[in-house]
Length: 261
Image 1 (cartoon, rainbow, N blue to C red):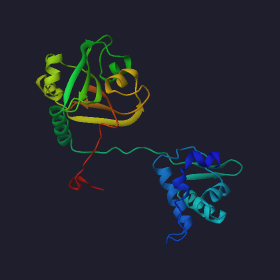
Image 2: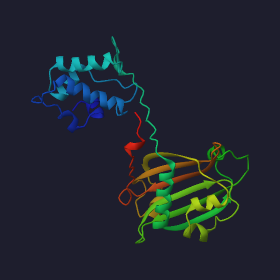
Image 3: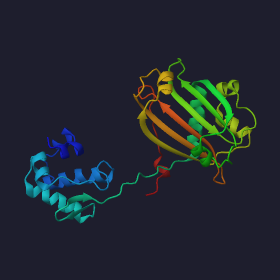
């Protein structure tokens, strides 16, 4: 398979066009290419295969491939330049999913009470520079760092957490953090979370994470970074979570009652 084609399309993609389908082949190809561009799978700036390469790879005529590319160009998703080929011009930006915070906090609290926590380390330290900036701390100012492992009720570890929190006066002890929910301790310190931002991605497991979760270093883990803010926009807590992908699933359930297109 041509190297350009193999980088952009799977074998399943290349076999997905159906001549017996009521939808014309050019439109099937156009739809496949458009979706790959819109979801970021073919990112901005990528040089697209030539019409001949597409025709051979998808086993269609060059006219079919040309019409599919014409449709993309017509929607300004790609740009054709003589002598330079066709490049993707669409900039992919992931959309933020908005959901009621109250329901999220209830779910987090419920998970905290139905799982086991082992505190690996807790202390008041000067955070790394980037975290110090995000938390709005002065140079040399300290925050509470907590390292924990979360396990299911049968004792199987599925998550490794590292958090940095500002404004804690009491309650951040190994004993309290192992038997109570952190959100409850924050409230007792006068910290009311008004907004939470979460970023999900995947990454190779670092040695200390792999060791606690029973994985091999470099194995893929689901990562979540959760930033919590007060009503005035001050970030008060940043939490780095690493989840064992075979022991944890992240599911969101959004009510259509809250959906407004």
